[in-house]
Length: 303
Image 1 (cartoon, rainbow, N blue to C red):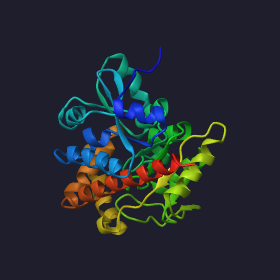
Image 2: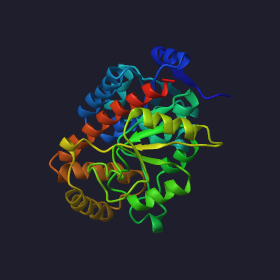
Image 3: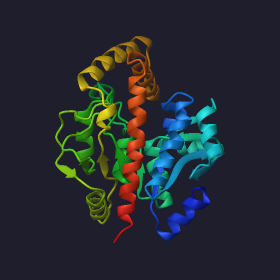
Image 4: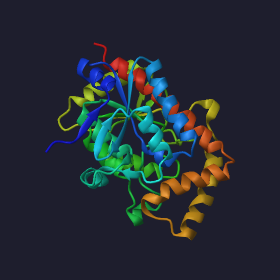
């Protein structure tokens, strides 16, 4: 059998004609942000992509079908329903077989976008090696999927709650280029810098498009990570974020939070510890990444 892909008409037309399309994950809608900010953010990201001349394609599994370009009603359901699963590569088989509904993670979105023929996606931050991952082996499936799916990912680095140096090491081992967009440092999600130097710097959407084209020509090429820092107006100092993270991690350990529950728990804890500042920063970087991805998608379509 083939994957049950269902395309929104506008997305299908754009793909068929070679027009720019940007894929968007849906876990941030169902599990990443509180209501009603999640719905507002989802629609704002789509609007930002359209304003830059590209077509947005929010991806999710709805009633056992992979929807490439959710309708506003479907996005509203993802934002408000309590029974929406979290779908990574491991989960997608069972969700489809059981005709279930789930929001796609970065890994799940990469898989579906590649199957649909979409060349670029936007997200907040990729998953990575969790702190203590050298002992727990708690490593996000995003990293292995980045190694196999030929889709460029615009993100603000990896989430600050992770072990960023080890995350970059795994990406290097898997042959995934990581390029800074108008920066020479790997962004740290809420903070613009992490102190980790990148070997590739891109100063325009055209440069990013050129890098993606060359990488895709390599045999067996996977993704390219375009690391785009959070806008300066919304950034939080790294030292401040690290202090909140240590407190949140201690709480998670005390409560026995493990596995895929760790990230949403920590992100929620950071919102509380920061008095809502991390939520506002998260929203700002998500919308900004969507706009940058659209600019790159447009440049990819130009000769």
